[in-house]
Image 1 (cartoon, protein in one colour):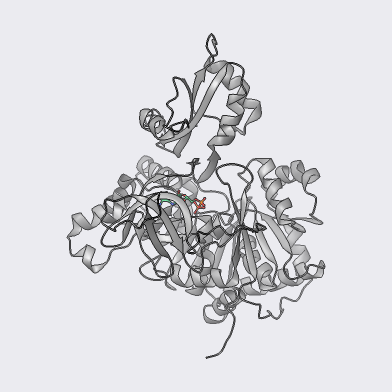
Image 2 (cartoon, protein in one colour; image 1 turned 90 degrees about the horizontal axis):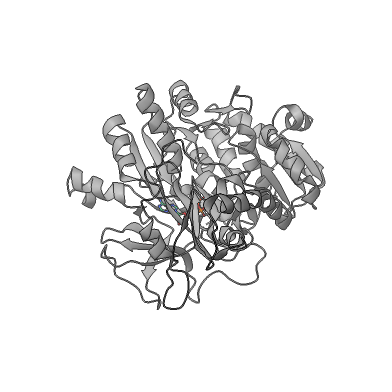
Length: 529
Ligand code: ADP
């Protein structure tokens, strides 16, 4: 057989050849819609690639984007890797110092950013040591530059294991860690993600990605969609219910996806306006657990099927995805839905998964035994970017930090999380970073931060403080201490003064705290935080 490398540029070239006039619609930062097709996207991506190389970049060099879901960002997904460059997709929602850290750590030479992120870029500029070119993607800055190039570039055959995307994930503590996706991992992931038992794409689909392009390449949607010749609708940063509804209705969207918070807002919009979901058929929701009521409401009230996904940046991100099998369907409608609506998903080709106890012993797939989730596969991380040590155990498995059961049908259900982080609206908050700030507040003896359920954001931080003896510290004083030291959306929703339970080994017993305060934010109004 021919030994041709798997390259990302092949995806857009194929889409432009086989589905050349399939539309791509994109909302700009100013709200205007831009329309073209795969043939147009290929020629603009090629011009973009020519312009990038004219800056003197070399294959292997990194460039960064700080941008939303638009056609220009989509083009960069092909332009940069297509020439052997690595696209680092910086996350504009991170605290400034984390954004700067990731760009410096990537040693990016170019930063392309959207107009409404200009202020962040201005603030960061003095701290960005390696950027030689700052270019605004929105407006005519980028368009003017690429217009000088022919857009007829030839795409080289690149070694398939060469780097293509650099995605950072905020760990439990310390600096964000980079995960370098390769051409091979991206193409294989896209092939599997589109399968009927996964996202089930076809050329008839109209995909509205509401997971950010900077979040694990929007879960690989740009690639899986283009391979199948689907139409794309890019919403920029407008993920509110009314904006999504407008695009769903006007563009005939059949498929969308994102974190539960977005779909809570969308359901809220539908309930308030009494509107229906138009052409929408399927949603892929993940990043945090999908509430059963959400999946049930979408299906029974609106006829929209929810496919829950579980994964992580380290897995490109597809791990498991919840779609029925004949065996599960044979159990009858109600039992099938019980499974589909309450499990993170079932095994997919390409990801080997096992659950083990703390002594590394395999646990049975009986739906009862819960253990650490370990994974292996061609789109799973081997080591973090620029780290010399492997992130795998001796047998080549990556420990996800999640705890789950797997049942006899291969459906996984997350039961807990080992890693000490909080996921709010799809973004990480480091509990340890908040604790470090809180414990330095005069009068605090021990500070513990745990994530508790919140009806809009899925999880929000709760700060529990054990005071020094004699201290009269109150919530107001704690807030005054935290506010100048933390980004606004990391501020705990509540501060509680209590004794802090410790484990047998003297560590803070977060599990006990999570249990004690599990319900304390669940009645918060939808608009809170
Ligand atoms: P992503 O960008 O895909 O959300 P992250 O790396 O930021 O990936 O987060 C991955 C973590 O998010 C997982 O290890 C898990 O703890 C959590 N997670 C992702 N999907 C789900 C889900 N469907 N249910 C519960 N937790 C989830």
